[in-house]
Image (cartoon, rainbow, N blue to C red; front, side, top):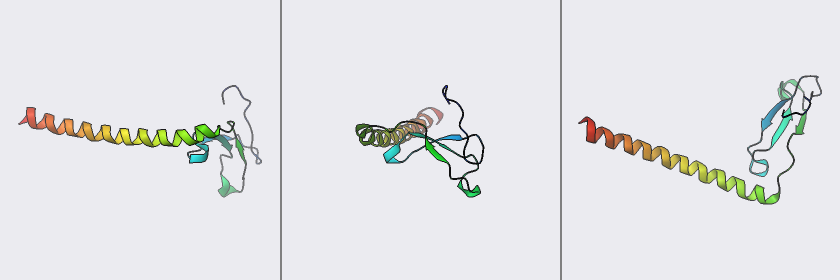
Length: 90
């Protein structure tokens, strides 16, 4: 955990670091019990400081744009493969 001392939850287990993917806390890490809520340990603590409001506004849009670009790239790669097969295999 980047030089920080390992933290224990309420039941004494070493906490697990997870990442939030909600729009309001995108990419922000938090600590939880490795057993989870199903075992009765509801330990939760933010690991990273809160992002500024500008980051909260901008980052979700950037990730959506990146996702669209990755889809476009996958489509273009498929087109290139099909054209290669048509031009050079047949």
